[in-house]
Image (cartoon, rainbow, N blue to C red; front, side, top):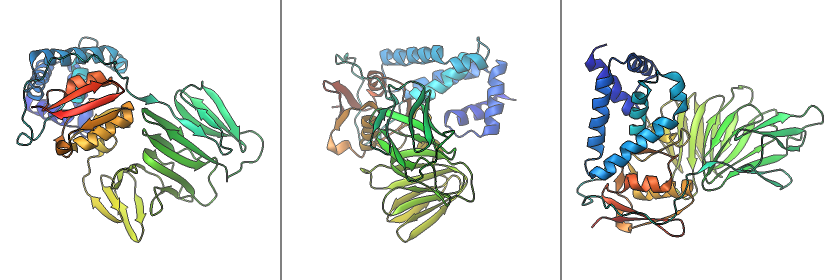
Length: 389
């Protein structure tokens, strides 16, 4: 492989545009060590480019953060030779930490302040949920240990390493009318294996309602908020997701994301694999992989949707590319369980960049400060965003 081809793969990797085959080719090339200098130069160049408004102190902070995350990246330690594993990890971490840009003619930028934030740091969200049983009893899953957390209607509900699964008990009849709800508050997300084997990842401030056993004719669940589904294939039992009184997503076996928060004007359904049929009132549309439907009475279908952006939350990342300050604030409020305030006139200013959802709020603020706005933590779990004067 020549340098030009390697650089092309590296660019695609950093932009999340690389295919599975190209990714295999790229990682194999990195593992040889032949392109170490190219990787180093690219990492340094990216840091200088994305940090063009940063002072030297903030650049050093980003470098230290990269090194800290490299040391914590145990899966990579197992897969790559020790002397070179930092290169791949650094490229990935840099992609996550590179906080982007603002429209230059909309915001006046000045060098970042070096003020220290005195308020207490806030940890990021994590696994957790409340399970509401058919009889109304509640089980807080954050503090429950592995094992059976409840038994009802002939079904054992089992918690295992932060995930919930339903298993038919060895005796007794199953009551298909018994409904459960998994509720994720702010600062929590959770995964569940439904009674049919379908897997669901539930984002913060969301809920999923479902029967402890699906009927013989269909599998029906109700969603508020956001969730990613990997539906077990069963042609004889269609899988329906009810989003509100008018919208439903019908599938047989597929993977997709639904964003249906009540405070947003649109419901969005993004298809990763398979095929889904969406109905909203009298409107109807069929999605194929890579398409996204925006639903507000009518259904608008977008080809070549940004799949990685739609499911970034499920993969442990914020993707703020082309996200307004208003949208950014909402995502941060849900994940860190905070209150975000900002100047009204900057609410629709587009933001850009990606960052891990695993960083603390203080770390996130330090990375974003200096991009044309002031990000300041205040007492009472508050984040204040203002235009830099």
